[in-house]
Amino acid sequence: MSQQLKLGSLELSSPFILAPMESVSDCAYRRVCWDRGASLTWTEMIRARGLTRNNKSTFDLIDTFDPEVLTGVQLMVANEKELAEALNKLERPTPHFKNIRAIDLNFGCPSPEVIRIGAGPALLKRKGKLETIFKTLSDWKKTTSLPIGAVGVKIRLGLNRLEQDQKVYLPLVELANEHLDYLVIHARHARQGSSEKPTWSAIAEAKARAKIPIIGNGDVVTREDWDRLSRETGADGALIARGAIKSPWVFRGLRGEGSGLPTSEAEIDAAQTQYLALAERYGTKPKFREWHHEGFRRMRARLHGEADQGPALPANEHMQ
Ligand SMILES: Cc1cc2nc3c(=O)[nH]c(=O)nc-3n(C[C@H](O)[C@H](O)[C@H](O)COP(=O)(O)O)c2cc1C
Image (cartoon, rainbow, N blue to C red):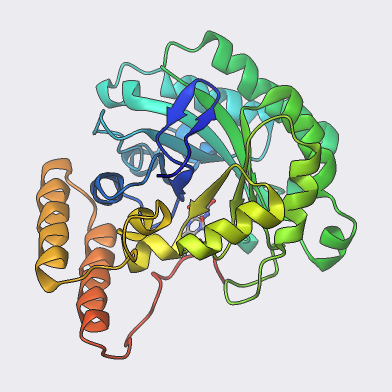
């Protein structure tokens, strides 16, 4: 049995959360992961600017159709004005927006396009600006008509090595304590790629100052990883990204229920059939379907001991 976790007023059945992932975390795949033990899920990063400009394709990414799967929307904002306007758009009378249970702000996306507009990790050392953004989010939570249980942010350790060494992430913990319900720490700076080792000790430093739950992120895949993360850092939960691409059963493994990998082709077939039926029902965009088609193919290949071929991750700007 794994312990429970409370974020704001959201009671999670375990500390293991599916990460926001561009081209991966669509409504159908979120359900596949939820049924296999994820306790909270996120949409992919949604650009607040697209919402404020009434961009239809941006609105279409808010695919919170399934009321049974606890789901939050992750936004990328450049400033508090954009955030307030984007949050206001979520109050539209669109039936499935009523299923949005949490809001996360992304201060970790390393895309040059995001950094150029002064958003994402470019904001990490701007404490005054961040405080205004955090406060805008928490004030909105108090008055929104949506059933929002938790608001929080996802950060990296800095824009670059220098900022990490300066520990720009630590003052954010104090701000988060005051305004937010949780803080996710992806324990890499924004110049680091996914193959580089995360600095979990930074999560421990943040945890020592935190009055809200700290969710650790970076290279947590197995139950052993979680035991070590929780022992070394005191993290209250873990956000799982690539592990859930490789195997949606990863959440069962983290809960101590099996290996976290599929054990038969029939199991993979059932998960893929479930995914395809839901993708059909929700009108899921081709970019997600194509990626998961490849993902399930690779799960079968791995089951049969074949070496991985083709790209391990969809082309995206988050993990360069
Ligand atoms: C394909 C892919 C897409 C991603 N998209 C997002 C995103 O939309 N928002 C975000 O905050 N992080 C995004 N990330 C980063 C992950 O959420 C996570 O922080 C990172 O992969 C480290 O976790 P892991 O070691 O479990 O993979 C993405 C990662 C991958 C692999």
